[in-house]
Picture 1 (cartoon, rainbow, N blue to C red):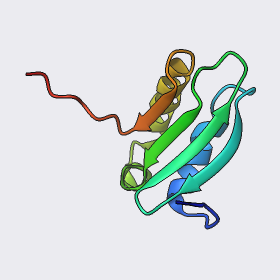
Picture 2: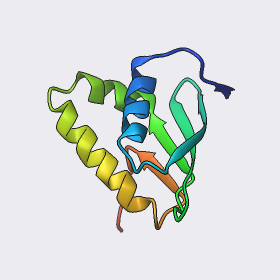
Picture 3: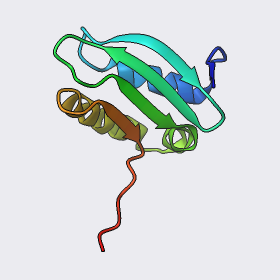
Picture 4: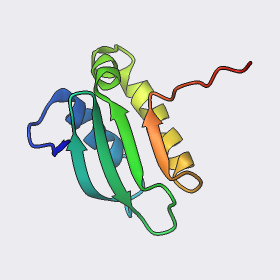
Length: 98
């Protein structure tokens, strides 16, 4: 996994999500591979230190006509998770209940 240099659509969406969070949230590093984008965060009072986005999911989100609404919801969900979870993945995978 190498650090991301090229500016693809997925990186633009990821950066847009980070900009919409609390002002004290800072990005330490952004790295990507063929399937994911990983963002290391730091913020006072936050437990959340890692965001992992699926590139395919971000591409679908970019093409969605309701993109603005979904991005707003996603940024609120990340902010909610910021105080309680160490890692946030998008999309979240559901665990089957047996």
